Image 1 (tube, protein in one colour):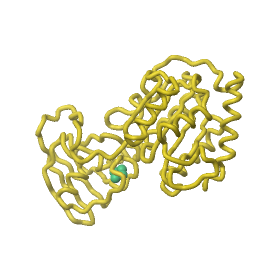
Image 2 (cartoon, helix red, strand yellow):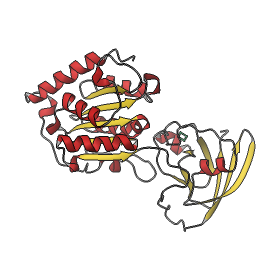
Image 3 (cartoon, protein in one colour):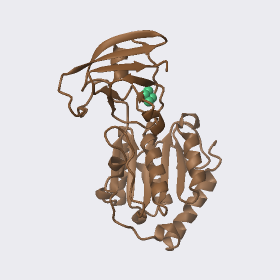
Image 4 (spheres, helix red, strand yellow):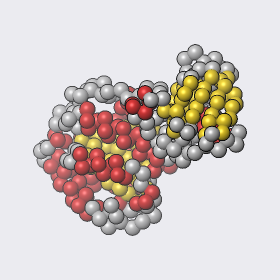
Length: 302
Ligand code: FES
């Protein structure tokens, strides 16, 4: 990408904004109230399975993502644009450098696929871009500036924000400055929770303190340990016991920790990486998986 398209993107963004200001084009369409009270919440159930959104909804969305915070957006943008034929989505995505942009290819594909409906602007903190607007941290000032320059604020139905804590705080402050009503803002903190942090809802039928027997095979080596059903993920529990397992994001994105569940049942906190076919074939993300049944047999070699 090299951000050569910044100038073009900015021009396109401004033209689109001017058309919207003039009441011409998609941004002038009527907003329907519908079932999308909380898109993020509506998109996945507790085990990360997609839930369709209302196809008659015709809205305009803005998104602000930082680093790994892009992961929910991939699903949200895909779902909105596929499910709402008249929706538009503008996404601002902050990263340190071009090489640290994750899902760059997938985002580019979405842009090609939804030309005119999906606008994507990259903002880099550690690399110079052609335009100062796209350089710097996604902090309060940057978010306010991007929003003012590239959006028609009163025509945006929902503002989604997902990223690290400081970016979320900056976004809240920017939205307050811009006078955006809280009801239009959907925030989600995205990061890697430390092992066993936070209260994870227990799967149905799992009593507190109850343990499961976990059998893991990797490179032909088998490890067995007991794991609390409402505690750490399978991956974290195994790593804590010095079992050598592959992982990268620990956020349900990269699938590096993918393994096949040969026996038993698990529940995953989130799943941004596995598709329906893989789920049906029995694959799980061990960084997100917690036991539901009394015995699990997990195979990393399959
Ligand atoms: S480590 Fe990336 S999905 Fe589990």
